[in-house]
Length: 88
Image (tube, rainbow, N blue to C red):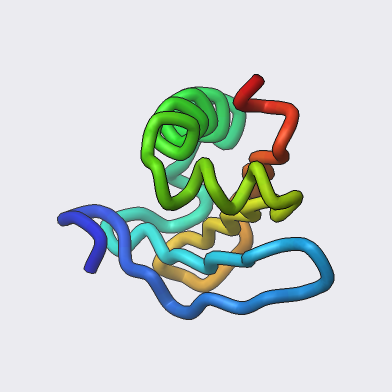
């Protein structure tokens, strides 16, 4: 568990991207306001990724970070992509 709401399912790599797949353990996809969730989480993730040395180093080397979210019903909610240009 990443936190009390989020479970990391797996991490993969494809081309110049790291892909993180998560499930929101306390919510079905229908219970999540996609726009609000992705906007809020996108801002938080971008701030976190751009201020942590390890993840910023990945971005500096041309690696994008892709975050995919599903509800606890395994239905896709949305994705957030942080690219190298997001931290400049």
